[in-house]
Length: 359
Ligand SMILES: Nc1ncnc2c1ncn2[C@@H]1O[C@H](COP(=O)(O)OP(=O)(O)OP(=O)(O)O)[C@@H](O)[C@H]1O
Ligand SMILES: [Mg+2]
Image (tube, rainbow, N blue to C red):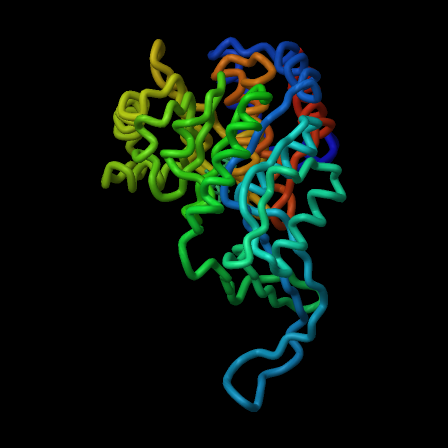
């Protein structure tokens, strides 16, 4: 997204709040720009569950005579890296050297993901292909008329039928340890598909070991995770509790997760309500969203957030600075269709625009 475009979509009230929060937390935009400039010097390992996000779109042509369903005239099929692969893709766009570790099936989904990575010149030596494994593919069917916005009408998921074999699990662990020894940070992306586990994370030695876990946040309690980026529903599920609009409740759960997981920092993403940053030594800090509260597509925004957060930490950011950078990136990526990425240039443009507005 260009600076000019983001200006157009940004309501003034939201922008003022963003700047306010920025100055309250004493985050200097020049410093954030310096951190972004250091992104290309960082090596980030990503260990986790790779997913292929597919989008099949068509024009509504008529109602079927076989069943009361719409017939779509196929317009196009597109695929994008999703899950851990989306974090990898974002890191590459941000200029980092990225080393993905995980498993793909010997199938079309696996081939497409490898093609995506190779096109971006990403080192794929940490990716294993397993014959007895299927690449998780999430296919969305989108229907629309020529001049209307497409709407998702169906999603079909293909997932592995069995657990990953012990042999592959060991091979992944070996690759992950190799990568960890040469990386500035390791990002663990656990979508519950089996490529990564708390036991594996525990064997990884890294200065920054960040975690996004969809289903088992608290199982990582002894895994040596330094920071985690759950969304609010994941925190609620972990403690079987409800936050709603009760920020005191969120603060309580966040502090609890920080202690239970023995983290240095916890970043809770809250969709349109922004983010909350928890650190041991200071009170929780709430950051409002950057940009518009009318997103175009929120698919995979959490992956962009953890990618930027981890990369910023590797570049020497404080947790608060990393959270602010991730917040800018989250605000930018939700304005793009499909599973999208944020480039280093886009992040810099957003920062420069805010710097100008502050003057
Ligand atoms: N409705 C929204 N309006 C504005 N920004 C949003 C919205 N939803 C998400 N974002 C941005 O994206 C970030 C991450 O979104 P969210 O909290 O939904 O993560 P998530 O649920 O983990 O995403 P994922 O589906 O990738 O797992 C938010 O912190 C915010 O910056
Ligand atoms: Mg998420």
